[in-house]
Length: 134
Image 1 (tube, rainbow, N blue to C red):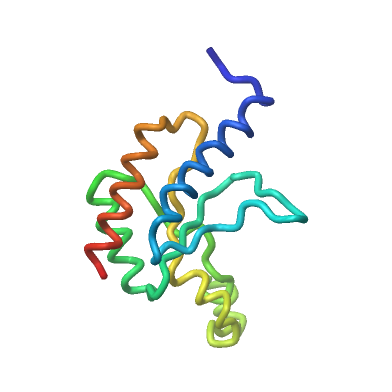
Image 2: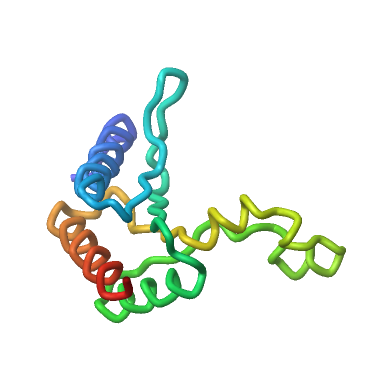
């Protein structure tokens, strides 16, 4: 049976919270903002950041995750790294915070048909990949 739109957001938030709860146990996990006094995430993406990781290590982690059969990526690439902006004179060195956020971020699967068992598998694969590259 197809879910109605009023069920989609609560389901996605539940999946987001499942990731949050699992990764909160690890010192290396920088959890994405979810809820504070002024706002609440729509849980559209799960952007996990790895404390102390640089771009090279992040890429090794992504490779290990991918080899285990889980599709992950880096969702946000700083504009200064894109050819259009680089060709117009933008320099990544001028945007150190953007680069910092980009260099250690991994976007995990988050969609409504993702099962709890699949989320558990993603979590296990990510933990193994991070810990094997430390």
